[in-house]
Image 1: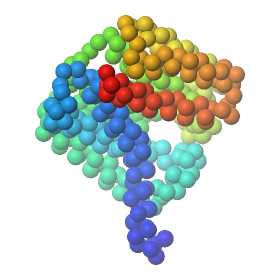
Image 2: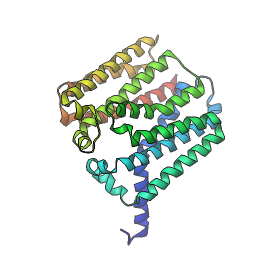
Image 3: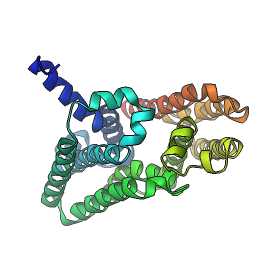
Image 4: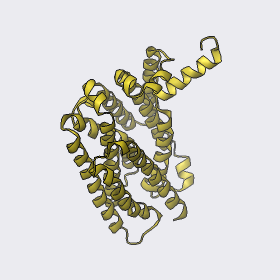
Length: 295
């Protein structure tokens, strides 16, 4: 491939984008903008929102931090990924390790420079975020239960930042945060089942490989049941059902259907189950968008 410079450079760019998890970043950016304007922002008009440079700066810094996190996590999980994700690892091999590290440092520095320009508090917010992402990849990712809780918390950290920025706290948003936390936790626990053997080889302590298959499935089922309860409370909190509240109504039935292959230990269906849960996160964003447009 080196005989074709253009193709080789494109392969290197693709390697870097995969390391930064570009597809996840696109979805994350869309989700953060939708939730910020239609959920956290209760007072500003669209015009004020568009010209609020701090909001765009925080979202941009969040995206850069997550991209950097994807790169450093890939650095620590490289051996594991060679076994569990051979195709992606092969694509990433077109770029030398030092360039991934240079990109990680550059993304973090740019984030800190922009956040420092925005305000000292925002700078402190992203300093903490970057440290926690690195510490998760370096230490916490191999600690039982802590790895799951930390990963989900770090995924939601930027949303918490936007909530603090707008200072819009409510009982309903608190319930929605619990709903999303439990949904993300369900996805992460199912992922541990799918990577059980690889995790065991490389020393990643998960519920699946420490306590066994049954305990892992029961834990996932418990988390889903809790989310059904949370969904029911959210629906009850709406005095009148709107487009977004129907998402939680449908979620109750969606969870009840997907809990069946979990309670019956159907590991061969877990790949489809985890992807359906991932799609359901995106569906929730779409419901939120339509609710904001038509309400």
